[in-house]
Amino acid sequence: MQTILGDLGLESPLVGTTVTAHITSIGPDGFRCAVYDVGTLRPRDALLPRSEAYSLPEEVAPPELKPGDTVIALVVDVAEPGPRGTGLLMLSALAPELAGLLLAGFTDELLTGKVVIKNIARVAGTKTKIAVAPTVKGVDARGACIGRGASRIKSAEALLNRGYGRERLEIIEYSSDRAVYLANAMNPVRVTDVLVEGENAIVTVEEHQLSGGIGEGGLNAELAGRLTGLYIRIVKVGTDMRAEMDQLVADRAAAHAA
Image 1 (spheres, rainbow, N blue to C red):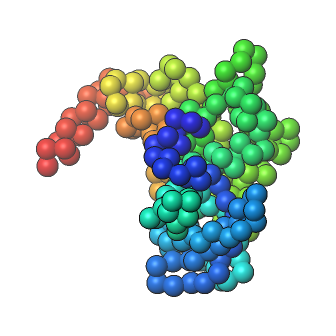
Image 2 (spheres, rainbow, N blue to C red):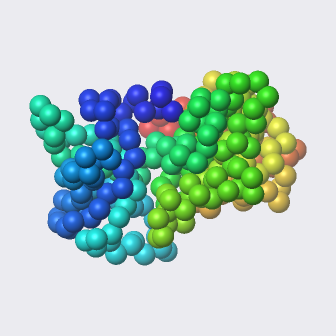
C-alpha cells in the first residue's frame, strides 16, 4: 500500500487515510461534510465533490444522499492547509486506494506486513481487482485477504458499498511472471494460454468462456489489463496466437497514428 499511497502526495498526514464523512449540507460543488478527529473529536470541514461521490452502472439509480448520512471516503488533498493543519479536506469515495485500505482493516496480515498490496484496478461501484503477495514464506496472501468463509472480503465489501453500492472485490495472486500474473488477473475465467510481448498480450480461453473473459462491457478484460499494465486481446482456444499478436500490434500502431 505504501507505494500506491505515495502517488497521492502526502502534504498532510491525513492524506491517504480513510474517514467517515458526516454530510452536513449539499451544494452545487458537492457534499459538505464533517470529519471528526479521533483524538479530540473536533470536526474538520470536508468536501466530497459529486464527481467523487459515486459511480454506478447506468441501470442503478444514484443514492439520495442527504444531511445526516455518512460516507466512507479517502482524504486525497487538503485545500489551502493552515499552519495548524487546518484546511478543507478533499474527499473521494472512488479512489482505488480506498478499497485496499478498507480490506486492510479486516486483514491482520496486511496490517503486519506479512502480505502487501501490489496493485489495485477499480471501477467504483462495479468491481475492483486487488493484487496481493506474501512477504513471509508460507503465507497464503490471497486466502488471508479473503478470510475463512470469505468473511474478510465480505466485510470490506459491505463497508465499501455502505448500503447502496454493488461493488465486488476480487483478490488476485501477484506473480513476477507476467503471463502467470495475467492468467491470475483474468479470474474467475480459466485461461488456457497466454502470449505476452512488450505491453501486449493474447489470452486464450474456452469458447464458452469468451463472454466471461471479456466481461460485461469489457470490464473483466479492462481491469485485468489495468492491473497488469498490459493491453489484452482475448481469443478462443485454437486461434493462431502469433497471428493475433501481430494483428494486435498493427491495430494499435494504426490507432496511434490516426
